[in-house]
Image (cartoon, rainbow, N blue to C red):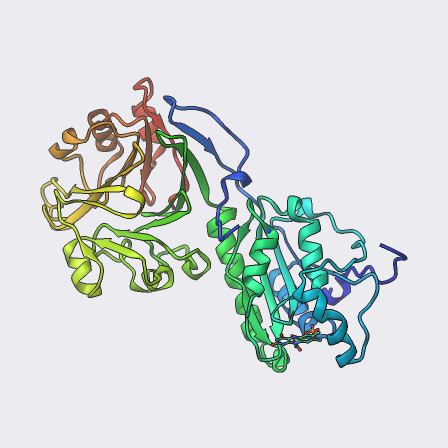
Length: 438
Ligand SMILES: Cc1cc2nc3c(=O)[nH]c(=O)nc-3n(C[C@H](O)[C@H](O)[C@H](O)COP(=O)(O)O)c2cc1C
């Protein structure tokens, strides 16, 4: 059945906001516990049921909405003004102008059959009116702000030449905290019918981002000494995201290593850490997608040289990054005979981040090396688990007994039976958490 048949318009009825915050912790309510007084956790997997809701005056946004809904296999709903706008362009502009400039509500009709609770991903479509959201769209978002919490939401808009203008910002503001707001997209209204490919690719990239960032990702929340939250998100393999006090830190972001990750849908990073130059850790495109003027890119010397920018840290280096976060570069290398060529001693980095007292050790590609005994007071450790490149589960358990973290995340495990790490550490007092790093 064509998606057009799913339009749930309320026209026949009588009468009747987050900064980019992917993987919002509020969306993950399944579990909550304290670990050694430092860690609270919440994880959830979502089915990513999608819907598209839109307002359209002359049909362009409707066409975009229908195309996106078709591609995303989403249910489609239309927002309508309780009192329709005049069909004459000038009169419509005259009526909408003061509403847009004053950010006034425009009463809207209830949408028949829409139960937001059923959806994980919400596409919202608006025409660009006076550089901002059409008032019925803004009204709908504000009315549904509470119900949007925990969902992944994304704005698309059609315009008459002005492009995005303030719509993305106004949309994020209207959605508010607690939702995952993906990067908005603007389409030219005039050429909308020739933009089917772009609309479809937008729909696909939102779904991919939702899949990697909200749907399938797992998030753990830890508290710093002064009670601030540090949110750790498993992206895949060696890639993870750390959020703290409005900061975005990405570790070894890699876009194409399967499953693909659309880093353009993530907020720009304040800090990007790269452990070494292997393709599953270093990806120029992912760095380009995440980088803004002020991004501090920190890498081992080889990667810094390849990039031609950023800061090189070598084993033993220490520096303060944004908001007083202390960063120590520590050794990461192979010791097993025949494996030492993978990660030779002295080349690659592991990192220890000290964030307001919370100490996080990201080991990089390493085996259980003697230098691990020097790591003190580690709250959270990420240890890699895939021989021949890194460690066996037995080596990870050995390393963990040396480091004694409160919480251990085995990562970089590919097909290794990583549950074995938890079995080996049973009774050790170390909280082993297996997250989706595949
Ligand atoms: C009241 C009104 C105000 C508009 N203001 C702008 C604007 O500020 N910038 C812009 O690029 N286009 C503006 N447009 C053009 C529409 O954004 C564009 O034609 C859009 O594709 C219409 O979408 P629709 O067919 O879904 O209503 C305006 C159109 C109307 C009716």
